[in-house]
Length: 116
Image (spheres, rainbow, N blue to C red):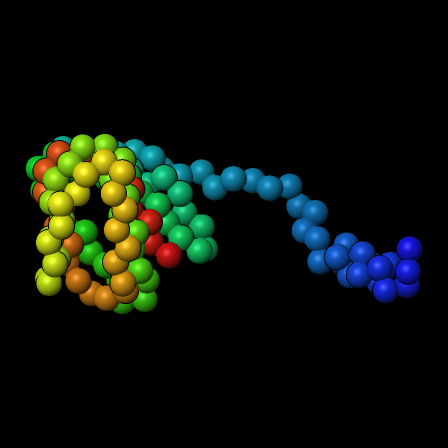
């Protein structure tokens, strides 16, 4: 082993976090909205992921600092925003740029909403 390799290994060992990983416990209780069930699936410092079951119509809000990915995992419907309309079917994925837009999902579908 060369001196450079030994120094790199020592530097790597210096920055390792030896604490036991403890996963974050989420409150996965469903929302109070009977028509459109929402469940938080994951949260970390980089993104959030929630599952939304649309049974008629629901409104999503975007934030100015984050883009939103919407993945339809079941069913079909329509997505409307201030300036676009789209048909949503199982398997479709939409990437929406950051901004304070109102997004309305209509129909009977289950989507994953990821915000970075």
